[in-house]
Image (cartoon, rainbow, N blue to C red; front, side, top):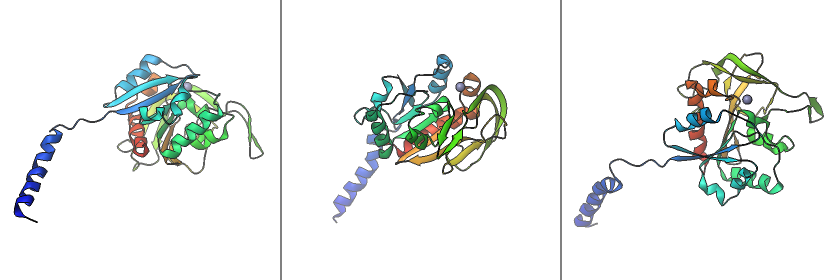
Length: 247
Ligand SMILES: [Zn+2]
């Protein structure tokens, strides 16, 4: 190689960072927030999302929301967050959601979204668990409806301190709604647990569905959880981490 071209390459290498700009612009992470079928404090929830740096949120509600599961519309967002509690889902939307997750779109299942789509068993495999709205029979076993209790003050234990979703977070206390006796698939990786008797022990977990990173967080009923710094951090780190599998 000629000396001149080596010099030219060096100059290019030196100029390149300047050409890209001294302050690289971070592309915001685009969250598609799916709601509908369950009320919530809209102002408080909106404040929680707007407190996150470089995160934009587009809310879509049922019955229109499932249109965003289609491949063409999935380009409009990086991460799906389910905060809905909804039962109707067409065969097409089921197939669209499964295909979306097989491609790797990151998903966070939050609170009452654990009770979505009771008649569709695949949803339990997607969320890694299920809140049973009524007595349910599975594998020949009858299970009673899951339970819930509002305004419980309880201790949350970090089960996996090395995971990116829980990194930097110590055990903490929270006031939130607990769910009891819900299903958690044995194959998930627990992130948060509790000894609170009104709650199922595993209250946040992760697993992979298709190519997608999925994080499910049981808590998050209202402002007392949304304003809890540890809860906020878990949610924000969950959203950022699941984005890692999105395409
Ligand atoms: Zn709730």
